Amino acid sequence: MWWLKAVAISLSVCAVLGGRDFPPEFIFGAASAAYQVEGAWNVNDKSLSIWDYFAHTYPEKIIDRSTGDVACDSYYKWKTDIELASKMGLHFYRFSISWPRLLPSGFPNYISEDGKRYYNNIINTLLEKRIQPVVTLYHFDLPQSLQDLGGWTNPLIADWFANYARVAFSLFGDRVKIWITLNEPISFCDIAYNVGTQAPGYISPGVGNYICNKNTMLAHAKAYRVYDKEFRSKQNGKVSLSNQFFWLEPDTKSDEQAAENARQLMVGMYSHPIFSKQGGWPPVIERIIAEKSKEEGFPYSRLPAFTEEEIELVKGTYDFMGFNFYTSRTVRNAKPGEEIGAWPFEGGPDINIILGVRGEWNNTDAWWLYITPDGIRKLLGWLKKEYGDIEFLITENGCASSSPDVDDEVRVQYYKEHLEQVLVSINEDKVRVTGYTAWTLMDNYEWTDGYSIKFGLHYVDFNDPNRTRTPRASAEYYASVVKSHSLDVNNKIIDEL
Ligand code: NOJ
Image (cartoon, rainbow, N blue to C red):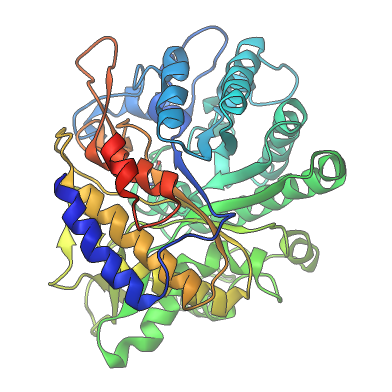
């Protein structure tokens, strides 16, 4: 196979860098998310999510004017999905629960029997196949009824979310041992409120995003405390959240402070409150936004403060750190008077920086995704330095393409190079990475990119009512890594594929 040559080259790289095998307890999985795969948007008693509403109401915001109404049809085809995961020998499958499918009112006054049955079926069948369920509670699909009450900008959402989490822990926690509370708050806070290309589509730059940010921290923390108090002793699971982090590096030597500020804005805002010893906002960002707000005539900071009690509530609410990694950016100081685009895509108006890319980084068909495998190692090193010797679970990593081609050489290469860097991080930098998740099991609804951008280990034919799934070369490659538990992919396994 063509990728054997690539594997052979990687063997020599790894041999030099120290070891090709993953630690014995290291786990491999793949991920998906409810709105991106399930479809069945109005089946039984499921209520509308903000993504149902967003895609139906603003078709012009979606590149191909598509919706997740059917998506991969996983509401009906979940058994096929599990079969794909099983054939690849995955240790775990990360999927998300649709809040409006389980709790149609958004509140725990009524639990949908259909929702309960659907997720029980998935969890039980995964376990029968010896695949561990890793469950995300929130992957962008808030019940629209809660959005109508302000959604993530209403402070009451911390309790709404904790109440939803309690239902999920009590229904499924006897079998689910790894929970992710929130997926990528940076997407549904910063991208949503600064840029508007995430539901709910209401733009409030520099205000809405920070209110949302604070409420996500409290929501996560309250859910974690519910688990601690009511479930941990019986269920013995682990709980964290997953944000997406770019690796952010200085454009030139003189931009080091700018890059550090950008890391604190991207990573720190969703990590410092939880993972640092002091808790609360990253001090440098708190100070800068307070100063900026003052200059703008605000009698208080646009960044809502945490009370002492809230700092204590949030601090330490983790059993590991989950994060998604795709790409990197350069950071430079903005020139005087230079216009600064929206965070986190173009720049950081509040911290006076501009984001960029290096000429030598290869782009993919997703405009934002440049291939920078060494970024994952640098990021892991920075996270360890910043938050200590904690456990890391990589909850997403993957490569975009607009091509349906099953000979996805670039994606194979992407996985191989990122896994190599993860190994170096474990072996050389002694970072405690315990698992890796490929995004994604199969092509699915890529938010405002609709079906035009594909990340799948499996190709999905969206023109076929059966939504046929076909393994790509990357699925075969990844399966061989999982089976040999090594980048030294066993030739015997390759022959079998
Ligand atoms: C991260 C998100 O969690 C996921 O939903 C999305 O499809 C991937 N990034 C790729 O953009």
